Image 1 (cartoon, rainbow, N blue to C red):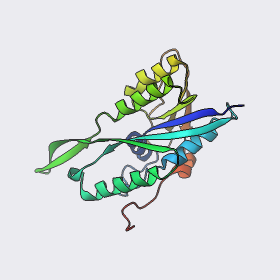
Image 2 (cartoon, rainbow, N blue to C red):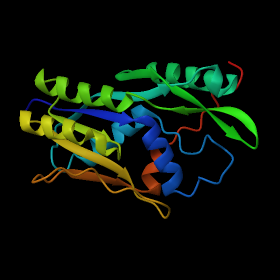
Image 3 (cartoon, rainbow, N blue to C red):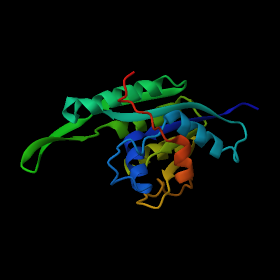
Length: 208
């Protein structure tokens, strides 16, 4: 029996911030809390779907992330650079980035820079549809709560691919799964025990 090919698509900042919200880390000053390792996420999502497809195999993990510059501070730039490099050393993990967009704001009378992701969801959406058209996967698992991705999910389903979603489920603020009209998508509700399996506590600022 041929392998049922699974690719995980991770909207990373969405996943990180919603993990902090779901599991009560938002007020914790340790910004490391909430990080996950993409390969571990992909492996978990492969296993969670084997009740449907025993021959389910992970064929790749794609991570979509905004890239900070010096306006976010040297520490975050260094952390992100080392984090992405670490992920890419894992076989099957592909990282795609776009520079963050910055705008000035005033905090306590001081001008500061605020960062915002632009185009990251579009990158994910384009890949999801293009890879469906080129038959790169049998099942796509989209880990995000960003409703801007819905047209891409709809397109992949229309092409004939199976699309699953993943969301955090914890005691804190939770976002529901992505849903498309007249289609029932299988959502993986990932609770605290799942987070403990995939969390990434690596200190990427530590001296190499």
